[in-house]
Image 1 (cartoon, rainbow, N blue to C red):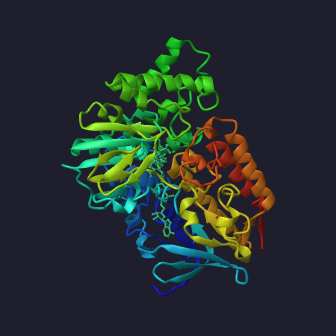
Image 2: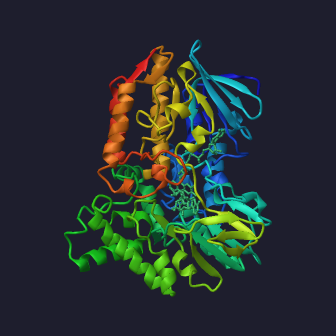
Image 3: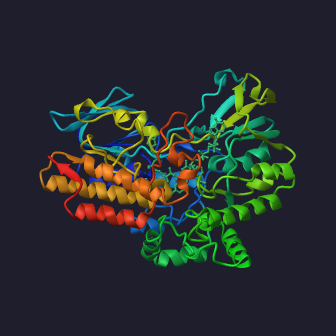
Length: 529
Ligand code: FAD
Ligand code: N01
């Protein structure tokens, strides 16, 4: 590839980068995608741990921009496993002939805005220097692995894995003593499968999590047929819900129904499985007393499932229900009934160190052959912070965001002209079905770039006033809920030293409406040059 000047450079070849490329090409623009990995798929390229799958039904966790694609693609299960989602991403790349504009094995190291020429220069790990009018960060919200800095990490004689950087050839844990650190979604999906292989599995838990059963299984042909008969209607109904998913919230309060009715509603949602449980009552994420009823229900399920009362107690979450991302499981709690699984509480006494032999906690040694770090991600800002991004006047993005990310609509940040973030902080992103949210951002950015072309604008930049007002609004909404009340990654609380700022925007429909209003009013809140 010799061309070095483009209309747009896109960083990342996950679902966001793929669609962005397709969209810009369709507008006759030149674009190139730069991707660290050797293939497309982003999340689904990196997270190959056992049991990895989506927890939003596949018929909705998929693109809708092509009616043919969504009609023709067949998902084999209610929640597709990682290999199938990766196949889908590859299919999309081939079907829309995207690969010829994607440069793999290329990490973007820096992105610098040139004040004199109003464009961006990106430098890469392969020694390339590429320039474009627009720089579009499709770097992912959950793509920068969080690896705690345990003492002695490198001294371990066995092998250490991170769920977010899993070896492509897979891992066979047969005959091994395995330790897993973390009990978030990735751990909850992988623990039951690792337990079946390992001689012994030791789970190191800092915070117990709420998990509801997936009730996964083969795709029901009747459901598939019904949705495909009116896919547009299905998508439109989902888009009208707060999370942009098919979870319909029961508008009753958990506190105004009788205990029997409440339990029945919880039981019905539990039987349906998956994230539907979150919508059992309208006030679960707003009112602590209502929330406690859901928490009690799940804790009772844990006690019924886990035979050893002490283990059941340890597995029972004490924080606000749904405040951390709700997990969706297959046989998670029952796995603790196996003789070869043990649970170690590291909430009060943290992991002291990794030693050549294993893990020590409070002086106690756990001999291991393999360690799995299911310790999550430096979410929403981590991938951006790893790139040396400099805006107008050479200001580093990390300086501007030192006290937490500041954006207008999660799409742009003042002082960084022509830089867009797909599902950036301040947008619904991780509190929504992410593929439709990605599509929404891609289409908004494409329209905006088209508007600039048509109106001869060289740059677009949000005003500080509109950004400040948006950040305040994001926080205002978050503070009406219980979300900010626990140590979640939504707040950056999982990464030592990260500023605690609630990052996603709550509520898909008002957000989409606001973005449309901004565009329809000539991109109000932005300035052009
Ligand atoms: P990603 O898929 O993260 O892709 C970003 C890409 O950018 C990566 O390939 C990365 O290598 C690349 N990149 C980053 N920095 C650089 C750089 N400096 N240079 C070059 N390339 C770079 N969401 C849901 O809505 N439903 C689900 O069920 C769901 N399940 C999930 C399961 C797991 C295990 C995880 C981790 C996340 C899940 N998510 C889910 C969230 C998921 O991240 C999004 O749904 C979606 O896949 C994000 O796509 P993306 O393209 O925005 O980012
Ligand atoms: O990461 P997490 P994840 N010592 O941050 C613990 C999506 N996803 O990869 O809670 C000991 O949730 C940490 O403990 P604590 C989904 O959005 C979806 O599991 O911070 N423990 C926690 O238990 C999800 O939310 C699916 O106290 C330490 C765990 O590690 C997001 O990705 C599947 C520690 C990390 O949990 C991230 O999920 C997978 C330390 N020093 C992922 N540091 C689906 O099912 C961290 N922990 C669709």
